[in-house]
Image (cartoon, rainbow, N blue to C red; front, side, top):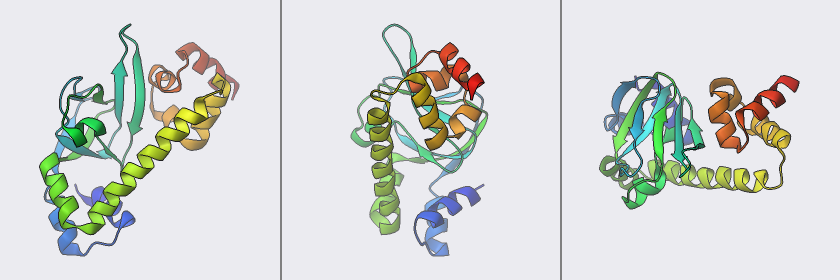
Length: 189
């Protein structure tokens, strides 16, 4: 149950076996259904999730009712509604499994205890924050001025799992294009 998490942690930093076991003991296992909401709009994010199996998406809904996907987490990744998790204010997003998933989650209080106790774990958290910032910046600035075809090519290069595992509707909402435009571009590739 914890083997993927242990691989993830050891791939990011060096942990002795005792430390690794102690960290893993703070994570709880849950099995979810497809399309299960883990965090609802206006909830406060109290858990950080590790994807053992499946896929989780972070999205919001516009005033017009349109879903806009912001992030997808696959096996071996951590995910939460990070601004809410950090500042403990209501989130403006949903966190949803889009496949049957097996997740490990750690509470916010335990997460920060681990950050404070293990410098290696703190390093991983810093790396996650930095990587999240970089990916968000690349997506924002990379998409500015891109036409639909260039956006799809960017995703193929930088996030290839997206078009293989996510519905056209969700992928299109991430790219800021219509599902029919995405289908048309994919058929020509």
